[in-house]
Length: 527
Image (cartoon, rainbow, N blue to C red; front, side, top):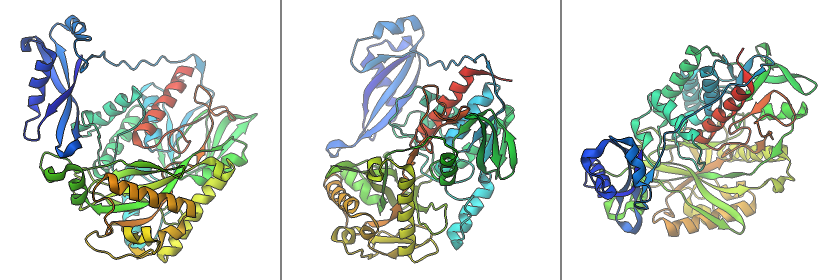
């Protein structure tokens, strides 16, 4: 396969024109080309004149001639086909294989294990998708929280109610395998070529259900509303699981519980499983009019029907602390992501169409383990303290504290709602968000917001609404593992995904789940 990069298209040109330009750029006779398809497309909005930049994939009728184009031009690359080989191991399984958690990490780990003939049992503390959706809707309407069925717990994990972003900083061949699974489950074809692919919460929910059904079709078993409460170990080796539905035999446990399973990390530590603190970030959500973000990014071309809703990613270093935007949701809404009583947690969500009036993103500052003496439980307690402060400032019933940007920068906590209507479903109440955070974090966030306003016109609009707090950007805990992927302290425990401290987002969590499953497959033979 030949990849031709840096193929430029104007906004008025059809995508088909990219193929013709790629063949011309390659210098190949069109009659020799067997097949072409769009491999990647992105928007270059620099210098105020947006255009598309494409990568086109071509295969020749005579495949052996593809190698002749190596080095003909910096924009041309000859790539081979990825093969996902995984040789089954020889050691007998010490007991049944169980996956705990049905978020992206657990889902893709279970799918990989099921396809290899390991017949995994999956336990998930929350309910299946339909019941989970009902619980989330009930909470948004009434403020009555179900601590086991919410935006953190239930089928699909925390990623279910998000933008469904598939962008990631990791460069791992297994990303392509995740894409293939998603496409086979009905994801939009555009995720295969968009530079910043996303699915949207509305489509992602149904895709996750289809992937779960594939696990069952291949001999796996799913147990919803089954909460892991402890490990049964002997001489630091796993032999069974304790759940609120009874004891389960288990020799291999894939622990993919997500970043909000604080109770799990508590009893793991008491059982002498080694845990350590890791970096995370805290801050709030910022909302702008999507149309104003589009103007700041696309300038005079804003509103052109060929352009997607504008999205940004901004970062800065302020007095030694990293400040950045995170999980930007074009045309989305701020959501109520609490999973514990008495604490407000915010996050962001978009549907596939991204057709909402507002854009929102987290604006957060990094926190290091050293600030808590490298104690993971002090770090989690810090997160919880912030959530409880936000709950109190909101006045209860999960109303969120909020202020406008100018009020936050001036330290007044003023909320004057104008064109930007807050989208948080439980309602907002004016409060000084700066007073809810440690002073150095507040000052870092203020400095970051001022810098971002210089880089993206309109970002520092006085009417932008800040809703707080955002505390669960990632896990505060990591479970150390060896080169195989097994816990350093508990034989048979294979921690993975975001909750175990090895991922940050849907794609990296899914990849880590597959990687963990493959390590198990290569170690053991299926029973």
